[in-house]
Length: 432
Image (cartoon, rainbow, N blue to C red; front, side):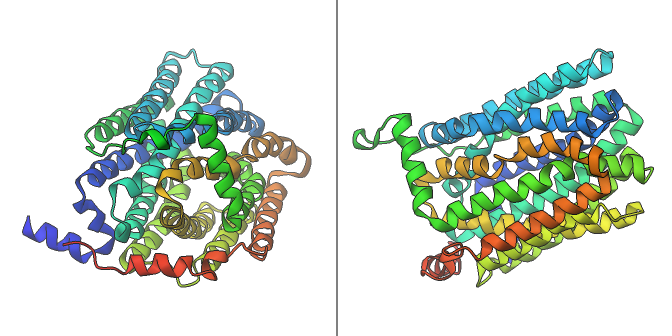
């Protein structure tokens, strides 16, 4: 045990695992992310088996994203009023039931596009409940001086589990046992995640009588806070436009390119996503070991964001699976860097009692254009071609991101002293 503790202390990214509740959260997150990686392979292959058209997978994407746009504000208010663990467990249960039903129907040969879309709507509703609660519970569990490491560890788990192990397992399950069993396996990961969250001891601080307000008042307070911070709402608006340009093309057309243009299998699609996982893993390890934000964190965030968006265009230029793997490696490396920076800034600079609402607003505003992105990608690909749509999406996403970076106030935390204060907290020695 002594050697294990010494390893944890020496490797910066592992230090948050000394916190019992975070260790349980991390285990649940890891298993759930593996399931998410299985899902991205299974849902693409299942949809294209039912209807080999980009518009079909786009419809599934709308079904997943639309309930999140509708429910995220309510979910954010709930996460600041209720026990965040219980909301996460409820989100896991809802998602697990929806995915298990898809799997059983697929195995039985009764799954149709209509039933698939309905069940994905339920899955998206569970995601809306889980997301803000998870984002806001981390600083409730982990000391401030370990937040960079905790977020880096989360981003270490994401590529390893979601974009490396999960897709490889998903590809193997689809190829070996069938798509239905891949969904059933994914459903089991949500059950494990719910158990791990249930083992956590963290409880919300009870509000005093003076602090108790109506849900509507809570929502308005969160909106006022975001509106008062230019760097917050500009970044959220950047997410809206850049993800409108790239999310649909990435989710819908990349599997189509691998399957139809490159002649690849489900396993090949798993390799493409897995290469992205390796890139994310590398960046997460580096940032976790460094243990602090870049000195010009907001600039770094926007630059990596722009490059990550631009890589969508790369999939319109590839002619082999290994080239697609290289594009995914670069893209996911950049996305991981921006996510670690962004989550750490939110958790350090946003007051804890507002974090659930701000996190839900962040997700809501950022993905507000995602349903439209899914809606237009099919017609765009039919009108202009798959490759041209991917190239245009990447270029537009990158240009928009760079433009917003120069909006007055977009990088205020670098200039008003708040980032320096956060950095001072980061380098404070961790408790022994």
